[in-house]
Length: 297
Image (cartoon, rainbow, N blue to C red; front, side, top):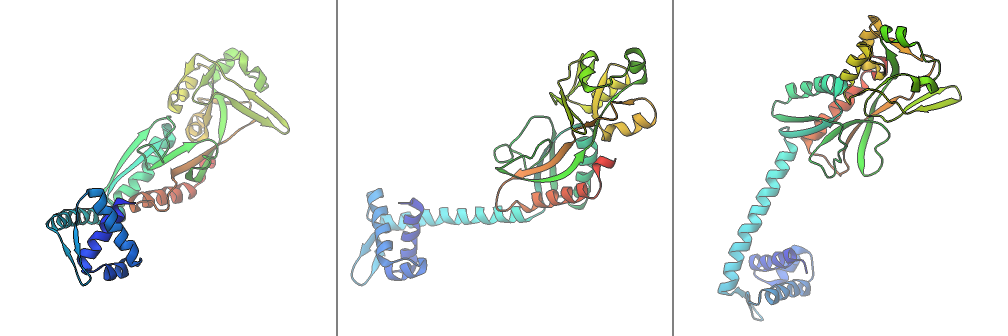
């Protein structure tokens, strides 16, 4: 038997003064109320109620138990109310895990400052890391990640698509030449990041390359710097390439091949209802990401 149900039945009898009225209050049978109280007394090894055909009264031990349990239930009620008020208020922590680089440290951060300005009682905790986290288990409320559909077990919204391309500095290409096909990339030094493979498509032709090179860094900014310094060929997103390409610091490589784009997802725990503070931030991020085309930047 559920201990809470036993105590609830006992307190209902104390308040109503009879098993019949207690049963009506809890919408269960009189026999079920009597059974629960009897099981409580058997488990405690103490008689809590004196029963006669006309009345029910508390034993001294019953009165002591009533006072203690009622106090505990009042504290539980207060805790539940406080938690509900916290969930409904736009205050408290919002914990976010995101990819770093320009996407997280510029675009996402700017969007979050907009919410922070509107709701100064929110406390933002932002972790830029490539570690894969689970919002159902890890201490995080929202996750911004790139890649395939996060799948079942979490709630997610696709918020964008990053366009990728290969590039290198004019100096590097003047020294080493241009690859004409993805299968020639093995002859070039590749600047690598988190992805272990680069996927290319041109019409019906599909090719997968596993890059190797002397410079490996998860940070797109570090890869960009290495490419501009002539260390090799890098695979980078349009978010960091606009100015380097326009200013001639980098040149696109294999422009007639399409590189598989990266989908961008906002992920949160799969539950019936998020705390209001988290839901407001989530909805703002979804709205802002959908308001412009990342692939066109």
